[in-house]
Length: 115
Length: 111
Image (cartoon, rainbow over all chains, first blue to last red; front, side, top):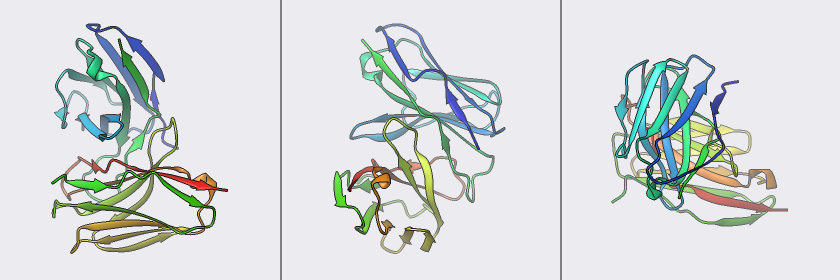
């Protein structure tokens, strides 16, 4: 079974702090993704990576950066946390390939509160 | 017009009812259509996947895609309290990593 593990379930940070959200997958997947999920807005893609050291912006990359130094690990960085970044953050992975049945496997999320 | 529209509900049905969940979309390039189920305090998990138009059945679940109408559906037969969750439709084009999600429909099945 694919396992996507997010390091924290709940996180509380102060405005202006630099925040690191960590995600590890154990199925040797090439693709990894960071989404945020907000009531009434659904899931929105922040960044994704299709290979080590490769990254592409999603729909809402502003205020975020990412790091993928190893295939199994994908980190989301909030350079200077703001209250509007309070959200549920979901990491996902999928095998290589853009066609066919390449489902996303999600972690259970990190609920981040910025005060 | 949003790329994917999904009625957020909430939808409440008695146990044993047939449930119909729907999404409409505007991007004719979408070819792969999925339904994810998300239980409370969990990440979404893939429930059904369909390529292009047609039906797909898996146990009590049936996914339908009508590309001419840009409309997809998920039917749940003999619904169970364990089906209570948020259901998210998702779709993408053929040569694209990016999934576009609906906002999700919250379903409660009452015993």
